Length: 106
Image (tube, rainbow, N blue to C red; front, side, top):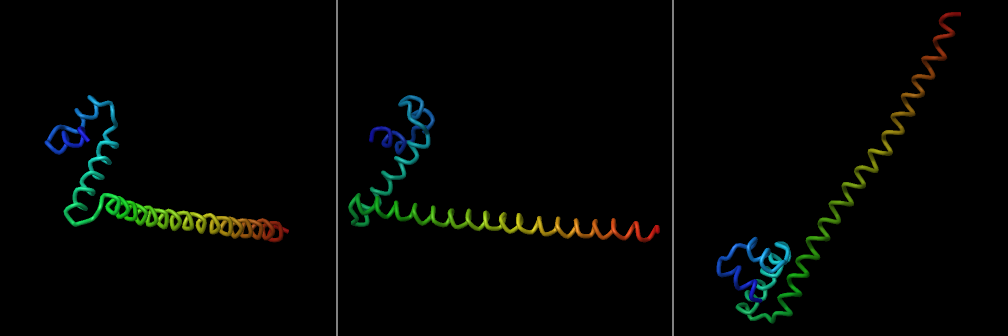
């Protein structure tokens, strides 16, 4: 709590992080959670309700990220299935060229 109050009073997050041997990411997360709980108090929500709302928001963000990741992977899978068919086509063209070449000579 002391670290968060120091940040809110304007101290540098880097200096607080170094002094308390806590990562900047952890301090940022704690500050955001503190502010969310503080805002919840102003809105008439309990800190638990604020935490649930923050977690629901985070779950929604992760769900969107997962969906995008799945779409990227399925796009890669389609590319992978297209490439062998192109290779097969090139191989067939090469075989035709090879089989036509001896007939043309003879």
